[in-house]
Length: 244
Image (cartoon, rainbow, N blue to C red; front, side):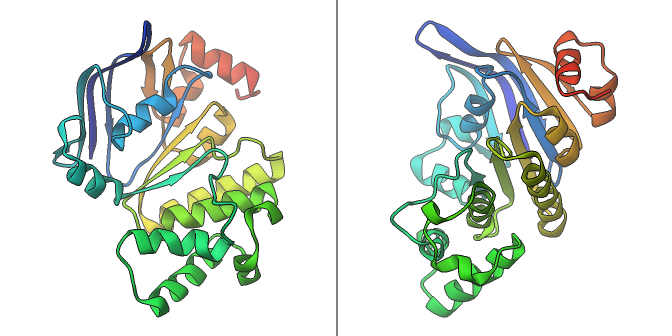
């Protein structure tokens, strides 16, 4: 379980997060929504220890992240897979090396195991093994996203974070990525945390939505509640995305 209590974060005079409380339960799929600049990514970066709060507590299981040592932070991060918004693949490595590197960094040295695991996860994201020889610049946007997902799951994390998983993709490819996220969440039994402003995507991949506005958590509820709430900010998202 992940617990966040009274989280405040400022950059200079700009206060991004203003007393956020949030529980993320094992096995659930949660989406954190909000407009650009509302602190979605800032909130998640606190969970993996990339940022320190000005005030508040962050717990991942029994470790208090904001007070953790560097050794404890590294232990926490090994339990997370992170799918970055733009993929963040290494351009100078082919797909195989991009995936294998994660295993090496997690202490795996057996070449046969690494080779087997790389080929296993590339199939899990519905890509052909021929992709392993290609470089990121040779991949389509959808393929890069799938490789990024394969990299996030290759070390069998307990938690997977998706940062704007469908940004820059056409509607058909976006739906395919959403379906992949749903399938992997079921098959791998991970806890899934997505960050997006796309309500349609959030509805498909989540069982719970959290909405941030002006640094505050203004909504936290089920999909059914998100579709029926009278909270003005959520109504604006429903209107914009044509969700009734």
